[in-house]
Length: 374
Image (cartoon, rainbow, N blue to C red; front, top):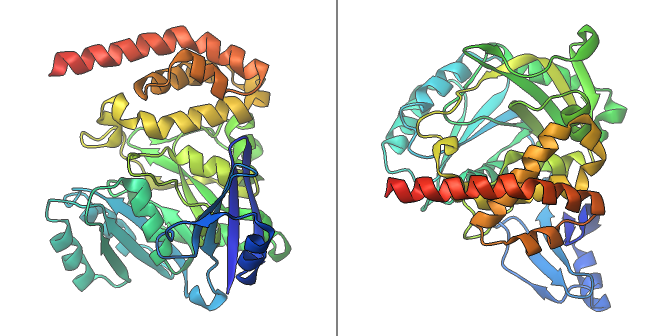
């Protein structure tokens, strides 16, 4: 059995190395790994910490090649969305190709289980249903769904969205059009979204149907900043799970895209593949900002620390993120001195300092609204 070791250092990006199970013993012999913790989602030996390098190691089992038995897995975390799941089901029922739908119920208290069981009885494609005993957040549910999936590609589709006609064929054909000798350099395919007002986001230049770039280049150079739909290789997602801590109920998807984008390219599509429901009354975006601050701050901090070289391409966006960094930090009790200490370069510190007044004003506004709503 092989494992992937993902090392996360306090001051450096994720780095990866593939090794055999016997390498654990070698690490122990060298004194590099000092202690092993509980297993990650029952999928591997767990995590270890090295005080010598201030690095956390996550050991995650790599999927066996024969474990992939279909083309695409659609994974959907859901919480009290029994009334929207049938719409997503209907959109999947009209798809062609070899796919499955993996639903992870994040502790719903409505009729979700009965609805999914009814859909399972009439579906002409596999539907897997798993239930979390408590509401732990969509990022935890997505991690579970990835572990349970068997598709070569895994598409992240929310429970209140739908998949457009022929979307899965489009994704699969785009993926298979990548030359075999280049596939290892690609994490997957990224499709556009559509709302009632039309397709979201910038189009690919020069009339191209697709573009092969890193996530950062796509985001900053080509302006692919709006909501998109990723279909990642399953083995890549298993190596880059969403972070899980007991007090973290939400993680920005951009954290995942940034980590994967450090190593892999994406094939961006010009065609929309998902209908995106904007700002539903029960969506995360409707929650008070303080409830989302823990999942947002790591994204803003990573942006200031790692993407500052792209500042000239999106100065207004960076200033907004600097303000949001301050705002989310204050909600978590991280005061200005610590905020500046967590930002590394001089340029990033100056940007964080520039965002502090607006971020503080937004924080005060949040607290005022919270007080008035009591």
